[in-house]
Image (cartoon, rainbow, N blue to C red):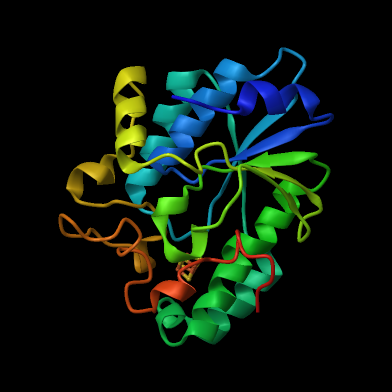
Length: 223
Ligand code: SF4
């Protein structure tokens, strides 16, 4: 599969982070990075534990670490912000309104992401343009003004077939929920299995309009 990583990676000075959110795309991006990184590259693989993940996700986390012989660093919501959030929304309040859902995503994902990216020169994502309306115009390499570093989207032009083909040829392990009809992996209250033929992201925040379906990690501005 074509990738621009061999050209781009040697030009980046300083530490790079891979945001690993347990998607099939992330495992492909991790494999690409490990294959194409120069020996001198300082790479941190990190994940954001929202404390709302599926139990299977923790099992899969261990599977990935073992498979690649890597350690995935986990970032958590800040305790004071989390306490305030839980007092306001309780267990399920994130479904009450778009504003409440974004508040939950902000505390559990967006704020920890800022911590994860602090001091990094670039971050790598598994975003693909065909995933949703909100990702149609993504470039391979862009400047992320929100976090003030480069953002690399090496899978951006990959089709569903490209991804499936790459995963199979490389023999990469997938999150177990894919076998149960999930097409995207997220938090338990906000993610469900989808029917054959439905949009990849339709199981995420299924009660919202498609143009709102981002958690804030990949938006230049939020709330
Ligand atoms: S996806 Fe749902 S549970 Fe997870 S942080 Fe966002 S609103 Fe909260």
